[in-house]
Image 1 (cartoon, rainbow, N blue to C red):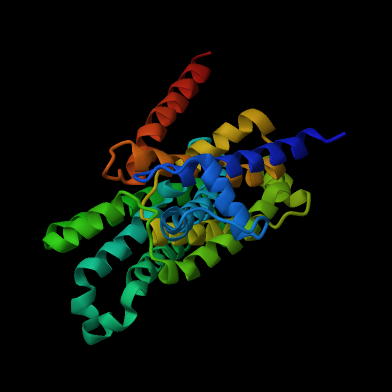
Image 2: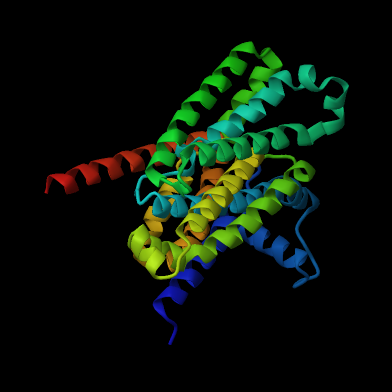
Length: 346
């Protein structure tokens, strides 16, 4: 008989597949589910005859790449949120709160506005890689700075690290505002849509960041047992054989790299890392051995469905996906705060 945990994982995998199929079919050119299934079956060699050329081009060239990008980005944000909530022992912790997303945004916006001036003739040689590399560099720099400032006597204070992240978050967003003020009309349009999140991306330029995210996700989902012991308290975790400092260092750095890579690919997409872990805990309970992989699947599902909503809510235009996750995640975050307020009153 299949166990509860295995059943949850299988159910979420099936839900992700359904979300992908549904998302493939919606948009400016409506393609029914039957055609989508026929096309996918044809692509993997199950049947010999596919769909018409127009539908095939829409699915292969436009929707499938962005949906696969959304699955990886959503999984990265979801599992990163679960790790941060355990690491800071704070149910409202989110990767964006520690300044990584804002710092990645600062790097990208700086490259969009000032890249030609700083790099000169070399700017054209970077081509589509310039902005993702700058965003990733901003995330790595922020992570290194947070780690350096939060260490004292060889130890890292998780709560102090969060406060430093909030300060860096404010500084980075101020920098984004300065470059936004300096941008011309063409640059302003580019960076405005980038700041609001998009999954349209650029295939070749996105591949290094997507690979980094995939490797980081695989590592983070293995931290379930150490994080479970960490939640008992740092002293207790040390007695049980956990190198607490190494755990905090690796978890923080890998989470920052995953989030930085996600911002480099898709811009700023908020609340996925906050919402996904809370939703899956309603089903799995608090055990991080289940919360981490299911948060990855939950994040992928949320972002896939949010992308589908973004493509149909203002047809024939497309709403930036960061606005959709903000509209859905903002009330959810407010509900968490109100629930915490009621709990403390009792």
